[in-house]
Image (cartoon, rainbow, N blue to C red; front, side, top):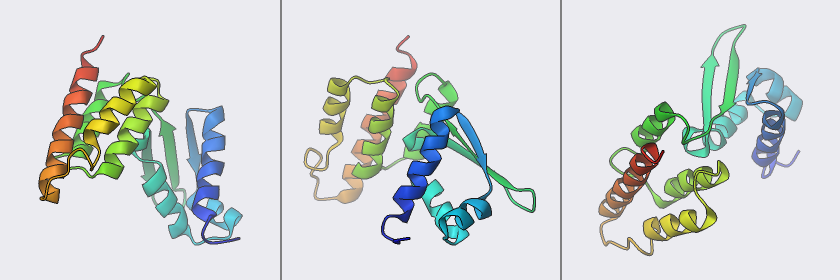
Length: 155
């Protein structure tokens, strides 16, 4: 199996299983064996592709009977999820991670395409082109947190 695409293939496989149910439980070693990769490759895919900013909650239990549970969550229908996103954003967030959050909100139909594009234009690095990268990431975080707080009280 080609190493350059293995993460994409594993992600696609896990998402295809998630399409049939909102939650799955996998054994890291079994998935690694299935794709002929080391178990840390499975950890990498889960850490980078199945996280809160992409609309997933991941729980794991280590040990012999251990598992990794991945659940797709609707980002706006749960105040706890919004709180987790705000905590994830923290004081600063880069453009790529900000894009992932807005993309997930769009995919969950929380935002329309037009709304998502307006927010993306607002948090884009070209818009927030400060000489100080930390200041840019701080302003982006404040904008995203403000948007999330507005979504919390929308209904």
